[in-house]
Image (cartoon, rainbow, N blue to C red; front, side, top):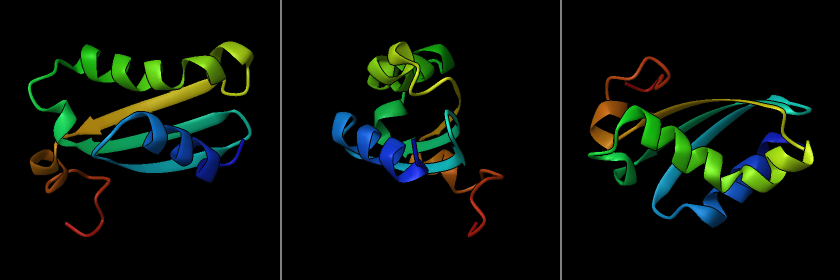
Length: 84
């Protein structure tokens, strides 16, 4: 899979969220930013992303996915946000 394919899958399955995807083959790093994460525990945030990719993980199309999630307010000071 390509990063653009992973991004398209996530955008289609999780509303009002911005995704930054890096990686290649079946190993990807996902950074997700959205109000949807406000009030969710870190585990619930991860489960939301994994749930959206469950079919691809089950099929082996995705093997390793590392996930970082932020609310828009958290994103302002996140180390991955180069424009901060």
